[in-house]
Length: 115
Length: 114
Image (cartoon, rainbow over all chains, first blue to last red; front, side, top):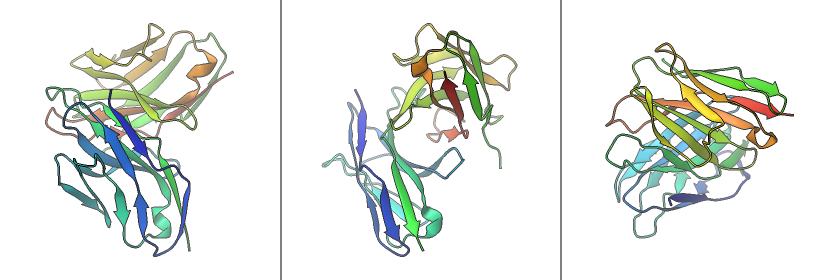
């Protein structure tokens, strides 16, 4: 079945540091790929997505590129801020005819950014 | 901005008791989901619901679990006889249409079974 493996945390960075959180996936078809973020006390929010190979998703300075050849979707940000401290989840979804799109998640990576 | 809400935020129950977790999806959304996350583990899909019926369920979603949309606004998850291993964070999510990938998540209900 489908699976997502992401970099174990926690990750602690100083403000303005470069961030990479690795994510690789296994899927039977051609999934859509997502990064979700969970701020303390809140639900999961979609951060960015990519629906086909070589697509780059981007939002709030974060970006990730759908790499079919390496089955990866690594999250990057050039300069993190304290407000980026959260748990980041990589996920995939296979449409199976377009009606379901259940999500398969990675374990989550806790990011802490210090001033 | 519309959001998915869940109640309660934390539920403590004794083993063998029934619990109902409640969710109010975004009002014009048509697809509904429950996920759970056991502490320190992955967020796992439980069930999806569309047009008043289950469209897919995982092997976790056994006969102890049921879902219902009783009144057109609430979406509930019932666990008939809770076990210790049901202790987890339960997330509800909703999605607008068949062509829209994004699922909107609620803040979760933390269920503790003692």
